[in-house]
Amino acid sequence: MDKLVVRKSGPLMGEVVISGAKNSVLKLMAASILANDVCVIENVPNLQDVRVMAEILVALGMKVEWTKRNELTITPAEELLTEPPYDLVQKMRASIVTMGPLLAKAGKARLAQPGGCAIGERKIDLHLKGFAALGVEIKQSHGCVEGIADKLVGSTIYLDFPSVGATENIMMAAVLAEGVTIIENPAKEPELTDLANFLNKLGANVKGAGTDTIRIKGVERLGGAVHSVLPDRIEAGTYMVAAAVAGGDVLVRNVMPNHLKAIVAKLQESGAEIEVFDEDVRVKSTGKLNSIDIKTLPFPGFPTDMQAQFMALISVAEGVGTITETIFENRFMHATEFSLMGADIKVEGHSAIVQGGSSLEGANVKATDLRAGAALVIAALVADGPTTIHNIYHIDRGYDLFEEKLKGLGVDITRVSGK
Image (cartoon, rainbow, N blue to C red; front, side, top):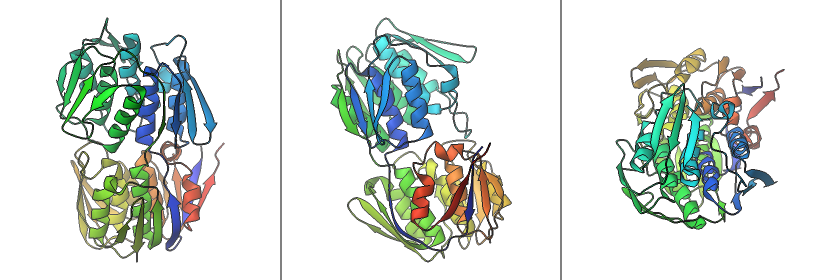
């Protein structure tokens, strides 16, 4: 199995171009199940998760081609199958969002409970509640969930929590339902708005994405479309934190600054200097930072996907910082790995208390999930001695050209191939 070896690199200098958003493209690919014509998705990050989703679509009978390095062409199935293979579903949590499109297009779907990063239970009860409200009969047994519906009928659905996946899944199921569906208390993440824009290009009637209420008027048929994936705000945030921790002057290009407000605010609070332009963000830092407190919240609050990267920052900043995780109950597994490098972190329930000012040392550590892997790389930038990061398949799931982009900023990073 591959691993990364990272050595202390000094200040980061240069620019990095952000790829399309992982958390958007997977849902756009799932939405292509709904289309009756060819879909072309541009600005696609070449990630392991994208390749898995492509395999799922092919297994369902569709044709998926990389027509360019960052462009996918998806052709509808002549006969759409409705049960994605178990081994593929187990690789990726986002596979659950194929269920809504399959129910809308074929009237049935059967999936194993999805896998992915071990960061919490992440139940799918809100997804199923929404499907049931649209007229789907749900059955769960032997680790699988099955939905069957003669037809989907619009309904008003209130989400107890603004779940991104549930909002997306219900929205995709509702676009072909009879009548009007209203989703109250939906998620407001930018990736969800990107999905709504794509659905509307296909011919759907979705209004209110990004607000407190989404209104979907069902249509009889969806066509094809060409759509470019929005920039990945989490990838952008990761490089911004790396520049703040290591010090230097880095221009992060191809971003949507409105999606980065919480990250920018916390970096400024820590002492980094941030300049915001129309489509770029510049980070300048001496590497000497102040500790901060973090509380993860649904968008537009601080993103849970940036929690681990900021734990790396707080570990080396001056003072004590507290991180409170409100989204996932098991997302502090990386704290143990940071401790192996010399960080002083105490986890108490949903909070982690980080005593900053630690002098980190290189060590053998493992990526416990996707974002934790990137965070360990950030910590390694300022650690004495080489850091070897194992289980980097997690990183490959979410960061396109990760080593190449870091090398372009001056990072000493090497991938060592395993047998």
